[in-house]
Structures are given as C-alpha cells and as structure tokens.
Image (cartoon, rainbow, N blue to C red):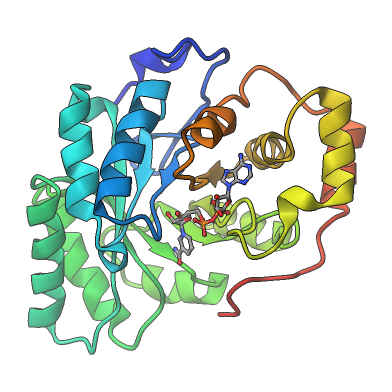
Length: 281
Ligand code: NAD
C-alpha cells in the first residue's frame, strides 16, 4: 500500500498537509493533483516536473491527451520514487473490438513504464463492458493498481458494476462551483466510488475565477479565487485536478492546505450551483 511521506510540507516549502483518501481496495490517493489536458509534450514535461517539485503527487493524463509518455518521463526525471506518485490515465473509447482495446491499453502501458496506478474508461461507449473485463485482467496481472470510470452517471456505474469481478474505485466527472452535483457525489459514494472533479476551475470556459461572489470571499480570506474554489472542493470531499502551465498558478493552486472555510462561507459557495456544465453527457 502506498504512503505519501512527503505530504506534510512540500519540498518547495509550501505550508499545509495534503489530505489523502483511501480508495476501495486500499490504494491511497492525494486529494489534489495536476491535470494535463491540452498541454503539449514539452509543456507537460515542464509542468509535471515543476508540480512534483512543489509537492504534487497526483497527475491526471489520458490516451486522448497524447502526453502520457511526457508525463511519465517527467516523473522519472523528477527523481522522486515512482511509488510515491499516483498516475491516472484513461482508455479512449473506440469502435470496440477486444484486440483494439488491448492495443490501446498496451500503448498506454508502454508509454508509462509498464504500470499505471489508476486506469479509467474516459467516457461511456458501446463496448465499455467488454473493455471493463479486459481492464480487470490488467489489474489481476498487476499492470494497473485499480480501475475506474469517467463521465458516468450513477446508472452507468451500476451497469459496469453488474457482474464485475473488479469494482470501479473512482468516477471522474465535471464538477465546479457552477455544477456541483451533490446528489451524484452521494450516489457514487454509496456505490463505493470516490468522485474526482474535472475542470474544477471551470476549464477556462466558465469564468468561475471571475465570479464576483468568489472574488469577494477570496478578498475576505486573503486568498485568490482559484484557491477558494479548490479549497471548497476539497472540503466537499472530492479529489480535484486543476490544470495550469503557469508555474505561479501551479504553486498557488497547491497552497490550499493551510486554511479552512467557515461553514457560512461554504454555504455561500454551495449557493452558486446552477447546473451549468461545459460538456453535456
Ligand atoms: P481547469 O478547470 O483545471 O481550468 C484550467 C484553466 O484555468 C486554464 O485556462 C488555466 O490557465 C486556468 N487556471 C489554472 N489555475 C489558475 C489560477 N490559479 N488562477 C486563474 N486561472 C487558473 O480545466 P481542465 O484542464 O479542463 O480540467 C482539469 C483537468 O481535468 C484536465 O487537465 C484533465 O486532466 C481533466 N479533465 C478530464 C475530463 C474528462 O472527460 N475526464 C475532461 C476535462 C478535463
């Protein structure tokens, strides 16, 4: 089982303590990590390396992002033991022959040094149940630490779980202050899955960090809007994976473990929910 001994204070001296959640089956996952969607190879290498230097120990990539190899190379280049870092990748949906699914999983494993902590199905597709049974084999063989889902509504989670030999540990879904999905968080938790927030800052499309309510709260706490949002998500119990290629933002986004929201302010943020989503699936 993994432990994160460096998690009390990062090597870069940032204050606080990164909370770690335990997934079904026992794997430990930090509650905040870096997402590398839309980063090209060089950006991915630089940002993952800097994030690891700052103390991040969770990286979220995907076959679809075309930067799995650079993610892994940055992990190796960081000099941090591989087993102190949690890497997530995702199987891109395909037309769905078993051969095609295996080839995709093998490609990801090849790019990522032969082991991936958590492999997700990126979004539902016609052959996802077949993909799940193939992925189960990889868990049993020790190539994946665990497997999970992304962009699944609770009914879809149940469909995958029905008859599964290896159960999903996590569901990565769109989640931010404008789309808080509290019922779905509860439904996933009832099924034994942790929830991970994608586009936790609104993905750059929804102007969450420009929201006047969030800005006012940020001023009250002497924090930035992004820090308020990330802190709120952590206090909601979800795992959050903000993306940035700006090193100052990487640092800022990780500095959310040395303050807490007053209950009345958490309620102010809860009231911002308006079911506004980036991607309607
Ligand atoms: P995000 O919500 O993390 O927002 C990224 C945007 O916020 C960028 O424009 C960035 O410049 C800006 N930003 C970052 N830190 C900031 C700060 N401190 N102050 C102001 N602006 C800041 O968006 P995302 O990349 O869409 O989502 C995060 C991660 O989630 C992705 O990188 C990816 O790993 C994952 N993701 C998964 C899916 C999926 O289908 N499973 C979909 C989208 C994203």
